Image 1 (cartoon, helix red, strand yellow):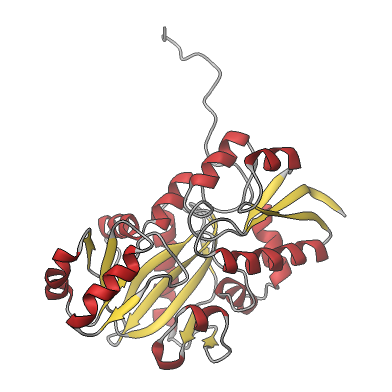
Image 2: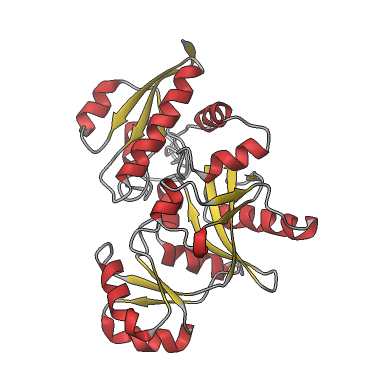
Length: 321
């Protein structure tokens, strides 16, 4: 066994709507780390307690959780209190990135392109949202991933049903301008000030419907990596991905999702701070195109495990009380 990383926990499963995806990600990461000689152990945060985690005596943990209570900053805050090094972004960046509305606000403040949107708290604003955004539009819960609760609305008669579906997952619902075009994603490593974008992946789903089934279960979806884009556009998207990651304060690893419209303009959709690591997942595809195996990717991510919240100085401030 490799002693470089010590006793490693792979946190997976959890309580979110993305539990099944996380189970697949965690198993893949665990198997890869074990093959590399790491003393790695699976730990399901959905069935085991905080006391169990303390008692496990891990030296560091690889977070393979997706969604609430694993990707949204809550777990990260707890690990900071435990002084247990972990992979991925810290509490603030995780929380910001998990909230698609707050992500958009930060990006817009920084002058980064993201589709127009409306936040809905009830069904009364549906027609006004359609007037502003036009049809088709996208209706989604702001705090879910893996296309959970997402609907493409092509007719006003679908607005109510789409809203109610998204509202099953979140108190507020995000209505977003629909961007027609090519779906792209950019895996990212490092950060927050030295982010490195990996090759762009283009996703070509049957009928343009990249839903849960086409993400994780179907073999019909095609993935092109590196995406077939000219050098100038490729460079622009890579730098935009790095900037979108940096302004949110992300670090360790992540994935920026884009739409590329017919005029060749890239639009940022969301940031994932604990992306999928399944056999169909996108970060391993980008890593492979960069010459990095799945096993090497897992080790590179594990290498960055750390606590992100600086401890206050124990020294008294000169001139203080």
